[in-house]
Length: 181
Image 1 (cartoon, rainbow, N blue to C red):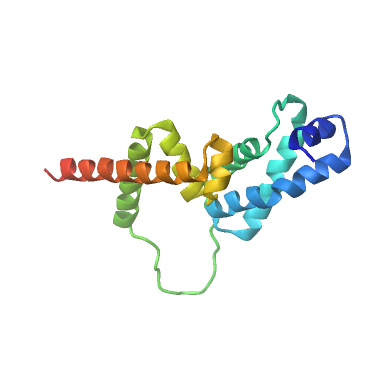
Image 2 (cartoon, rainbow, N blue to C red):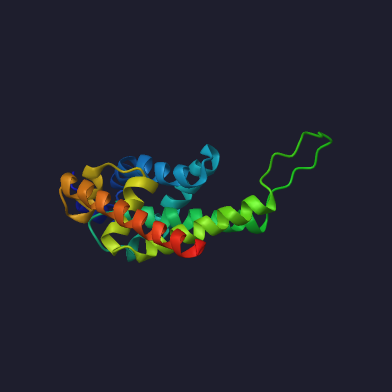
């Protein structure tokens, strides 16, 4: 069935259409969340929360393609979860005295500086280049899936990804050369 028809039917209260939409999108949303969080239980929870949020506001959804909308909800939930976990880290108190292999303050500082450099470099890319890198590298989508979302052929997506990576490398190299002098 066409996705637009399923969405309209689900809005009208058809449970079978809602179930089919879940079946169609559950794996993709789970993959996005799992790649961000790296934890199966959290990924399952946030995937479920993604669909719950969508169903609560289904009347406001306008469109015939649900995938990008669900990914946006999922990524926002991931950002919130990661932000909150940094604010309120779970600390387990035990008598176990294992050696501390956690990153040092210096390693955290270097990682945050590298992350900031990468974010700045990504922001300097053209919007299409940045989106292709997000979908292909961060979300792990195929060139065909990205092509459908962006209205391009898989070959055009791969070419855009290649140009985006070259541009990103150039930006990062220029930044590193400027920071050394």
